[in-house]
Amino acid sequence: MLVFALMHIPILDLKPQYNSLKAEIQIAIDRVLTSCEFILGQDVRLFEQEVATYLEVPHAIAVNSGTDALMIGLRAMGVGPGDEVITTPFSFFATAESISNVGATPVFVDVELESYNLDVGLIESRISPRTRAIMPVHLFGRPANMGQIMELATTHGLGVLEDCAQSFGARYMAMCPSCHGQCSGDTRDRLAGTFTGTLGTVGAFSFFPTKNLGAYGDGGLVVTHDGAIAEVAQKLRVHGSKERYRNEVFGYNSRLDSLQAAILRVKLPHLEAWNQARRRIAVTYGQLLADVPGVVTPAVVSGHVFHQYTIRVLHGRRDELREFLAQRSIGSMVYYPVPQDRLPVYDGKFPPNLNSEQLAAEVLSLPLWPELTDDKLGLIAMAIAEGLGA
Ligand SMILES: *Cc1c(COP(=O)(O)O)cnc(C)c1O
Image (cartoon, rainbow, N blue to C red; front, side, top):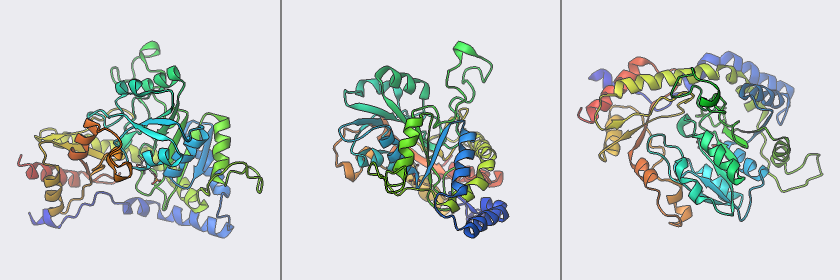
């Protein structure tokens, strides 16, 4: 018992990753400081090229944050005042905030309890003459149902902005769920195996330090197949100008720092291995928690990169379990305790979405980082079973 009490397990530990890359990162930082190219220098250009190659997309524009990537993405798609954007209530507030900040109105469509992602079957009835775009979030790293979202978008002439803040490296249906990669042609989804962020009109990514590909400060990325959208996004990140002192639109100061680009260039080649480690941990959690009554574990669908490992704790016992884990010095977090549409900023303006409300009361995210060891996973699972009296 004493061992339990003394072993502190945070929800996230970024130190092992830094320790494993320390020498390379210090060289990269020194290179930028020596060059004195702090803003949009060589490292930003090279990072944009390298990340575009990795994601298999022609245009990648590095910006100041994931939130800016969402706003710039929306504006580059032509979304503005008077427009409606369909999105999920169950996400971090930056998702809806970006829609409201460009002057458009979010239309909240409920999520599936199973995937935590948009319930695509509910979208069509919410499309109005003012709808301009659908904004799915690949929540916790699980790809949303992009096949049907793209079909709806094509049918109704809508843009699609993917919020990929939590899904860097996730692939939509990396393997067909029914055949595990054996089928082909008609039976296989046309989009299967494609990286999230490159299926829709625009993909927006975040490099906030805790994300799967995290910088050591803020950062974000806009990607697109559309050259005209890429050009507008490039302008918007530097005060709406292509040429200096030829400002054409009201833009932002939203450039990725060269220092962050240099750090991200060191990290990018490791991302696949880190995401694989996250998936392995998710599989282990699933096995360890399979028989704990009152816990619903997330499915390990192919292509999921587990930004978070988020369980549902049934029978109203979530907060009690979180408190029990805290007493055992085990970190956990509630992402998200309030659906976006219920936040004070929207002041009860929207009708409640029942699945999102239920998830807000049931979800609990457990410790997860690529270097998290099996012995710690065992301790966490034992504590959960004990806490729920299993
Ligand atoms: C983190 C996050 C954002 C915002 O990214 P920042 O880089 O922090 O601005 C947007 N959407 C989701 C779903 C996020 O998790």
